[in-house]
Image (cartoon, rainbow, N blue to C red; front, top):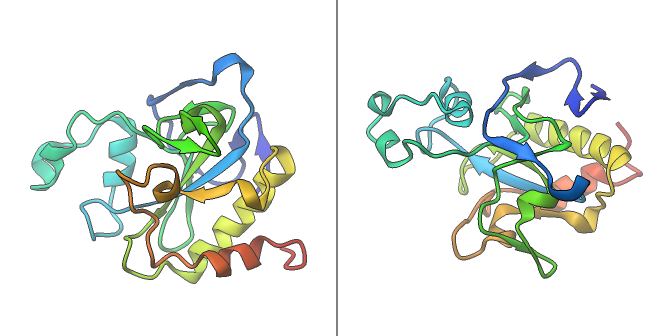
Length: 184
């Protein structure tokens, strides 16, 4: 996996219309880890792709009318089996953080990359997800001014609104995987 023109090579790409240009040529300097499952608590299926592309059918699940018309995206999703799907090139602004603040700065979408993990706050994430997230993180750190201190959870930048990636996400394990001594 490499990076070309903001896109990862060798992975599935599903282009989301829910993105725009970063303000004033802003370069991403923050990585935000999220958790998502659609319907809530369910894994697999087409629904995350459909949400991020604005094609989710509200009749497919009783939960979906609550999120009908939501215009959200992330740069990437890491599925339970470790598959990475990219929706937005990294140089563009994905709409993943909403009302948010990091280190005193608001509007985190302006300067961040959003990575969704298919999961819930309470179910353990898979080993494959940690490995792929670490691999992706190390790649992004080589191309952007992202450091371990500038990696955070959605719950940390929007604590009143969000809880993901939740207590099931093992930050210490992930941080160990991205440390320089770990290697690829």
